[in-house]
Image 1: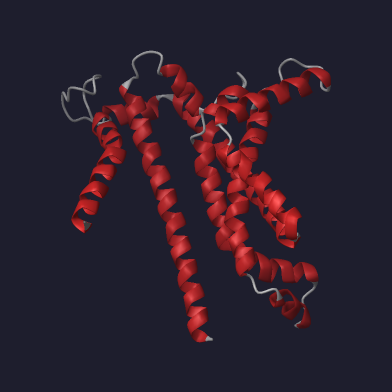
Image 2: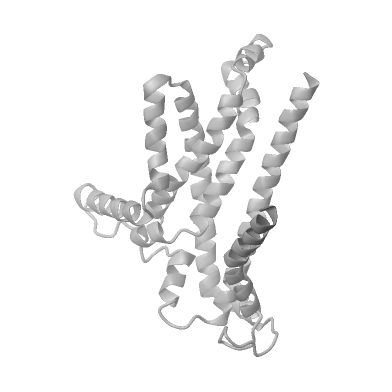
Length: 271
């Protein structure tokens, strides 16, 4: 039975990563057809870094992802602190509302936000051209918030409530105790939430497609427009680089989580 389980696991991983292997090989293909490898070359990567249009779109996506992750981390941490202070039915209700965006179809979220922005633009700001960086940022922060809250909440539950009082007894003001004790203890959860928000924002297409404007286009939206015809080989190189960037980010997140677990185990053994 164990052998069968291992074989099935290998099959699943092959199914998951075979497309990326093909894409990786295609990024070094001298030809334009992925079904035929015509020779090894780095020209696709050189062509990518010479393409100022794609690099500009990548920069747009990175700027948006960093801003969305930063705002979502701050707002999500504050929200988690507020939820932690709640009790009983109110807390359960708020957590249920927090989980809804995670299971809500992205197309529903995207259309809803687009309708909201258009309504605000026409009725309150008296403009037809409201969609742009601001609407993209609001939308990305909206769907990133639950990931931050769910990353920080476990750290708050593990927090010893007497630490805040102990810090104040030792001379800290409430603000100093908050930043030196509370923030320090929940920092791994905040970092995990920030990294998750960054990755979710960087590759989001569905929601971005409904709330972007012509003045600020993200890379996933532009790639969708390119898929209407045969993709140039430099796009394969771009996909490969993005995959490895996300992979490195996820490895960093796992390392931080493992380090946090080791610290907690050391504390338990020391006591």
